[in-house]
Image (cartoon, rainbow, N blue to C red; front, side, top):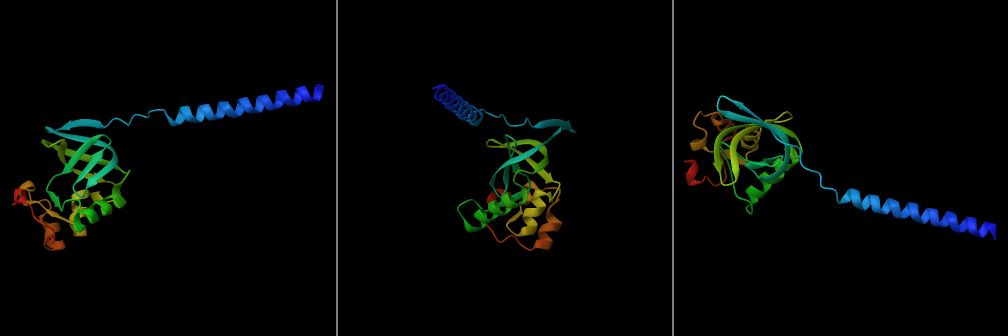
Length: 166
């Protein structure tokens, strides 16, 4: 009889431990983990921010932590087109979840800051995308012709050049 009571207590303890583990796992899975804050600094009236690339929206728009950034001086075809979809996938493979530093020019386009971004492993993202042939230089937004030599080396952009770039 003593053995039965002891076995019942052991079974009860095992069940309670199991339930405790299940409850703790569910609690951990439901915890909200806030994204790391983007570091913002001012430099010659331009903002420089650093953080982690949390999303690739398309070939010329990334999200740095929670800040959407339209890559300045670059144009890519829209999503839903073969070249636009390929540009997004290429960029995801190269820079997703990487640390980046972006220099913002103070302008906005819709919800996006405008700037140029660099990742340690690939350098300037705009240069990477032009070199890949998946995106092109947007002359209107590259007045200092930073991307011009790279575009000349890569050859003419094969995608659609929007009117706002001309």
